[in-house]
Every structure is written in C-alpha cells, then in structure tokens.
Length: 310
Image 1 (tube, rainbow, N blue to C red):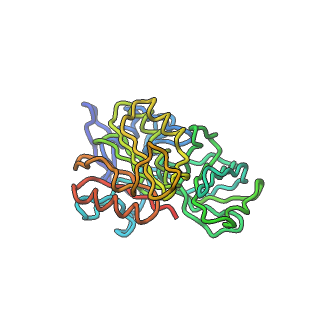
Image 2 (cartoon, rainbow, N blue to C red; image 1 turned 45 degrees about the vertical axis):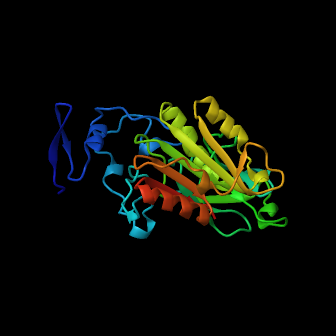
Image 3 (tube, helix red, strand yellow; image 1 turned 90 degrees about the vertical axis):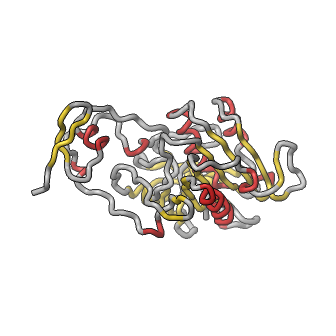
C-alpha cells in the first residue's frame, strides 16, 4: 500500500503522495485549472481539462536523467532541470507532405501524422526519414507560424548540392519516437534570451512563439546567426516577433559577400546581450555555437538549456 499524507493548499486539506508538489496536489484535486498549450502542444504537461483525482499517469514518475543528459547549468555545475509532468512516449507514423528549400543550406520538411504529437516547445523526437539515419529533431512551425495539430514541421541543415536530403520525396513514410529532452520552454523566471544558428532557429522559433502567447510581457532578446547570410531564412518569423513587442533581435553571419546592412559580422556568441544571472537562456544550433553560449551563461551563473542540431 502506498504511503499517504495530507497537504493544505489555499486553506484546504488535500490528499497527496510523498514527493508530490503543492501544484501537483492542487491539480489532482481539481483546485486549479490547467492551461491549454499551443499548436498541438500542452505547456508544462498540462492537459485541456482539470485532472481527475489520482489519475493513472501520476503513478509512474519519470526516472531522473543521467548527469550527462542534464542540460541546465549554473557556473559550470550541472543541476537537474525540472522535468515536465510525466508524458508517455509516443511512436508516431505519417508521410512527408511537403519539402521546401528555405535557404541554400536549410530545408523544411513537413510530415502529416496519423495522431497528434504531444510535446513541449523545445523537446525533440527520434525521427526516421527514408534513406537517412535516424536523427533527433525538434518540431517547430512554418516561418509564418502555421502548423496543423497533426503535423510535424522540421528545419534541417543540408550540406552541399547532392545532399541525401535532396532525395526526400512527398509521400514517403516517416516515423517519430518521443518526445524527449529537458530543454523545453518554461514559463516564468527572468529575461528570456534565445540564440540560434541556422536550422537551430526551428526549436527557438517554437519556444519564442509560445512565450509571446503565454507571457506577452516577458522581456525577450534574440541573437540569430548563420555561416552564410543567405541562410538567414527566418525574417518573416522575426517580423512577427517584433510586431508583438520584442525589441532586441540581432542577425549575424560569419561570411557572405551578400550580407545585408542589418546583418552583423561574426558568430552568435559575439552578439548576445550582456547576460545576467537571472536570465533564462535557450540556445540551439551546431555544437560550437551551443558550447560558446553555454560558456557565457556559466560565467554569470545563468540557466542555460542547450539543443544541439545535428
């Protein structure tokens, strides 16, 4: 028999299990209403209706992630990040319904799935595409913010002409397993600093758009880069963010003769705002970009959630 105890929430005694937080106990008793998520996701594992008393999903808790998988750090010391409420892993199948070139080195792939994917913005799936090795990819939105609830949109880096991605054809089967990862968007906290390089903008775009809906008054700053200025494909997305009140957005490129006047030279790490210990930082992109931003965050003791894009 499981041990039981009681907890007083807002002056009312509720039953709970050892290890439950006050928020979990209140949700389980229906004392507070959960918040629906966006674009087919539920933020922080919250459902679309008050939770039933002692739902089955509460009985199995996610095991703590190994230290090597814990992304959050303060001053270089690994600290376990809070995991979303337990969500069962899914195995999803579907077909490729759209393949579009966003830039010379960026491809957008849209898969229509037989079931709705459930994940937090910033989480990833193991994605099997025909003719390619399994990759870990974060679902995102189209650059205009559109996405159907049964779609998975991915931004992928491609190499030179003749890349295996160029052989992707509409109608081919795709399989997803997940969601996984703890670098998801968390409402609350200090200023939200978002950094991305190339296709790493995909998960950052999902996080930024969710944050503007959930926390429209939260301070936000973005630094977005690419090796070549022609791969800065996200201008429509950034225009939407500016229209919602995001004032500090910096574009940068490491090379490119056709660099527009509003694109600064250099890597993403060189164009972050001065960081503070109260900042919450999400960075997605190649391992060099992610490592540089993590080092800057660790130097001031800020929380940093990395997403390495293969």
